[in-house]
Length: 571
Image (tube, rainbow, N blue to C red; front, side, top):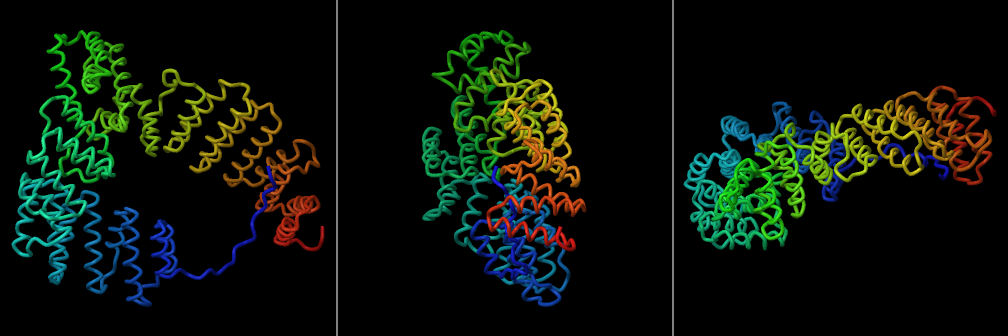
């Protein structure tokens, strides 16, 4: 380990950001940084209203880019009276859009009514307000209200172009007028118009299931967004003419549902897929003369269909997984369903919807074999809360899995998911099962223990490091564990104990050791001693490091550290 000394201190008094720099940070993909610059540099409203408004407009843009809808609406609601009229109206419209993004259409309409009553908006603003009313009904799936509001808008303002034409077409599709939507979109070349034409064509029956599936597959190959894929697959499910087609379309819809956002067009649900599986399975059972309850024969049939007709096999597995009273058959079906869905590009997402969707089986009913798969799926998409919920009492590894590795994964998921004490218990049990740890095992455990620092639980990390120390025979690994124990004490606000542990790590080879690891540990000990008020001891350590260092940069940093102690005279 190389000697790690701090860099030279940064120059103080950096200039405040300009609006141009804030916009540059936004364009570079750093909206949180842009927001921090705004907080530091925005002038006070009482000093310069016009300047404050210019910065505030940019703040609303940043909050929108972050998807911080609650923060945006709270910010707008907190404005004092007396703001310039154009900006006040602009801010309310941004708040309305934030409400719509969260599906709060009734709240959005209340804001719109308040804006209309408080002032007479200019024609351009009135058009936008009326469009937002239409959109608010669309968000909640109120087809008749959206259609009525859209007709009134068209009477007052005409058809308009671009985004309005798309909005009107979406309303027509939702309200069951796909041919009118196609007529409205005639000649439009935008991507959104192409999507809406395809959706309306499927709904109107101009494309049968096979042609529609081919068109959706071709669009997906060109980068079809998840929300569009979801909506198109949902529409295809309604055009299916066989149980197998309906299952296949619904599986595609579920694969994209979590990222869909807009669920008011051709929306469908996990329950629809469960019902489609059951319908398909019952038809298969009639064809093959299978009896309800004798599910061993159902599973045997499914096994023969796994390769030639995987949709049929999954339907049988899904039905047996929910209907079988015998635990052995049920678990066998669940395992086979996981394996079959795992062969699809987004199959585990389908499984997540079936068991974790808003009308799926629910987490309290999810079988163990399914939960193992969902832990992996949730980790793959960064959904730590779901992974934590699914893993919390899965004490045994999945079939064929490694117990040591599973305990580490489960502990990491629990600590990141806000259950650090549960994670600590998992690691305590793991350490109790391994009285001696190999160096590689120590490294693997360390990676989990460091996560406790990130969730502000350094004391738990310390206790586990201490437990691990008794199981480590390799001297270098023992030095490392002592160092991480010291770091835990430092993060816990106990610098005296931290200094002691850093020094134990430094002097393990001998009291005068000055290898790179020892130098780093001594430096950290000196910092901790300074924080603890033991400045003479800190100076002793800095001076011993100074005597051992041959690098001018390190020597300069150490002399600076000694001067900053503020002790009189040479030591």
